Image 1 (tube, rainbow, N blue to C red):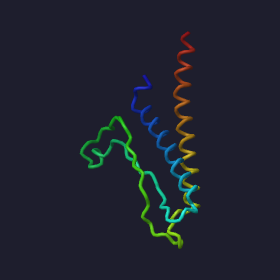
Image 2 (image 1 turned 180 degrees about the vertical axis):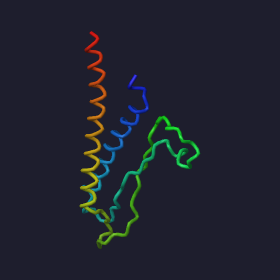
Image 3 (image 1 turned 45 degrees about the vertical axis):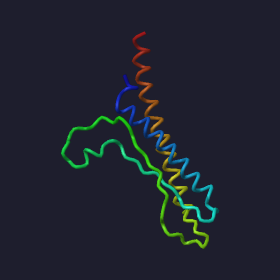
Image 4 (image 1 turned 30 degrees about the vertical axis):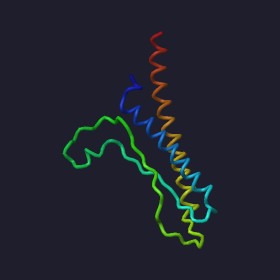
Length: 122
């Protein structure tokens, strides 16, 4: 079934990560005037790290996606110590929104396929 497939798990994980990225960008934007605030970002990796060394050539099955929220240690150009770059945050927010929307469309398309097959057999 599609729910148990690695492709569905990858899509589901991608939706969750893009939603989290939107929340982080919104938080950074909301704190743009907070003195000393350091921007945060999201880094993630699928459980593909064991395949990076090139020993395994088969496509792995994705079972989970790990993410970590990092606080930027970039030097601030502002006197108050805040290092949020508004343009970069708005761009990150838009990119995460676009990814979120595309992944939801992909999931919807997969369900539409199942509905078509099930509807044709009834």
